[in-house]
Length: 91
Image (cartoon, rainbow, N blue to C red):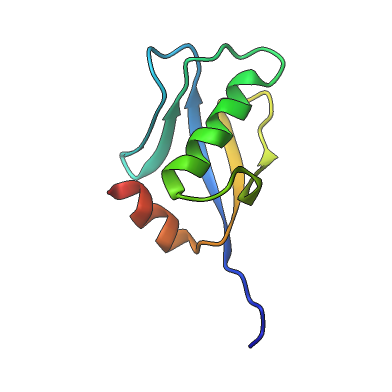
């Protein structure tokens, strides 16, 4: 056994100050709405938690790679391939 753990990077668009937290696929892209404000990384962290929950992963398996201050963020996902992650978000 090689100990291989699938990983992928997902690009997501985060919308802060939403009425509720929501993770979905829109026009082929991942969209995350969070209630938190975009101050001191609060919206980014809320998006990370929401993405991990939607994927059925632990929070530590989802890490921010780029986009701390941008609406477009890239998260590294450990434990799922890109195909598996997108399938999980579709259902």
